[in-house]
Amino acid sequence: MNESRIASASEMTTMHCGGAIARLFEPETKDQLKLLLSSLDSFLVIGGGSNMIFSDGTTKVPVIRLGNGFNTVEHQEDIITVGASVSTSGLLNYCVRNALTGLEFLAGIPGTIGGALFMNAGTPGKGIMDAVLVAEFMDREGLHSLARKELPYSYRNGGFPADAVITGARLDVHKSTPEEVRSAMESFIVRRRSQPKGHSCGSVFKNPEGAAAGYLIEKAGLKGYRIGGAFVSDVHANFIINDRDATAADVQSLIRMIKERVKEQFGIELQEEVRIVD
Ligand SMILES: Cc1cc2nc3c(=O)[nH]c(=O)nc-3n(C[C@H](O)[C@H](O)[C@H](O)COP(=O)(O)OP(=O)(O)OC[C@H]3O[C@@H](n4cnc5c(N)ncnc54)[C@H](O)[C@@H]3O)c2cc1C
Image 1 (cartoon, protein in one colour):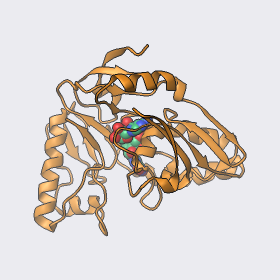
Image 2 (image 1 turned 135 degrees about the horizontal axis):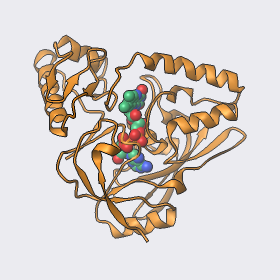
Image 3 (image 1 turned 60 degrees about the vertical axis):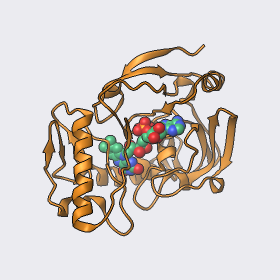
Image 4 (image 1 turned 90 degrees about the horizontal axis):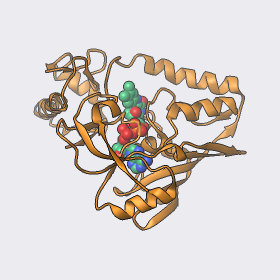
């Protein structure tokens, strides 16, 4: 039986803004998820909320967050089978404990494996989809398992259908030693240490072809620019920081303004990496 509850978008996202979510469902098993999908006309999925912003009003569309039944990880030789609600850090701890290499580039990225797969999260040169052997997702028609080459993934886009609930994946890894895995992770963590501190959603915009969004925003003179409780980071201009109880409207106004200025100055249309739920 799937029951919903009211939840706070601000508490469920790393940007810490937004209003209420009227109906949050947290299915624990694939059977519950199947039943739930058959009962909903529309829905959206949230993982760790590290790449999502909800508006200040009440979000009426049902929101699904996979429960603990999807928080499983195991491996056999060179294959890890991971559930979608496992956190990225939880997966990497598992890799260290079991001396499995290949996923260290995810170190320091917040959120869940479901979110990482949907976003094809990673570094500028590499995304988690590069490590996928098979991804599993459910839609109203049932459960699907697709090999990586069957998914049209690209930079910050896992290539999943819009109505897919990713339930897990099998990932390609190799045997190593705990020390080597830890040390490879450390090099990514050190790089990410220079990222801005504070409540954020990471990079707000995707890097346009051949350019860096942060560079364009900085050159448009917007570092430090503030609207209400949110401002463009002085450390990395592609980050918006919520330091004074920003509303989602503050953040959205800042996003609109950045897009306008960059378009005016460089003729480039920035595209959001963050998902905004209006
Ligand atoms: C400080 C900071 C640093 C960051 N650094 C990086 C970085 O270096 N590289 C990078 O790529 N990203 C980075 N991010 C962005 C973010 O952490 C990643 O995109 C992350 O993988 C999102 O995972 P999540 O579980 O939080 O997804 P959410 O934010 O919850 O969701 C993101 C998207 O995925 C969808 N989704 C989530 N779970 C599922 C599911 N099970 N099935 C279907 N769809 C789903 C949501 O509907 C939404 O569209 C950073 C964010 C922060 C706050």
